[in-house]
Length: 227
Image: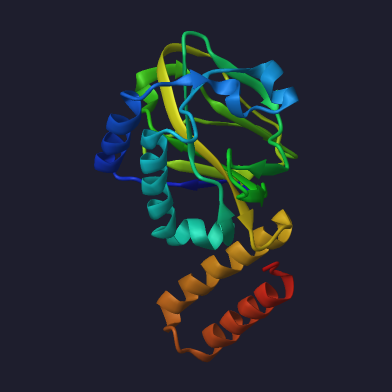
């Protein structure tokens, strides 16, 4: 499942994060690449342990915790500390798949990457190219969102960032280990949760069918969750 999460950050929050990270020292993006990704990746990245990256990452994590849409779709168990990258002058990241296991640098924090997320921090008009292209059974999907919007997609997907030919593309990226490992089951639970919420608005939270469906949702979650 691919999901667009609009306005995860307000424009003011985007500006605050950009103020933190734009002035920081950037390094070669291959600092966090696996062997395969390093062959395809040309960009810059903030060091994981830089003060700017840590503070900006905390702001992103706070926003994630406040987003009912993100929580419903991802059912997060662990979120990798958000990282930050930028592309300019033809830089690109060719077709690749994310590592199955991610470990934070100089830490024992480790996750299984069930979901990948890209949070856009540049407006689409600020750069040419730079589309995130995600492949699934229905073909290739190109994503280029307003600053503050996020795309969530299976980490097992083949994906790439097309060359940035004008301007600078700045984004945060990170991975999520879900309580529900299987993407199909996670999608089913998300669709069910959305339907329950709509019915609750129409019929009332205490209506018998809404209560029964809510119970079914939680019983499925109880059956499938890995905690």
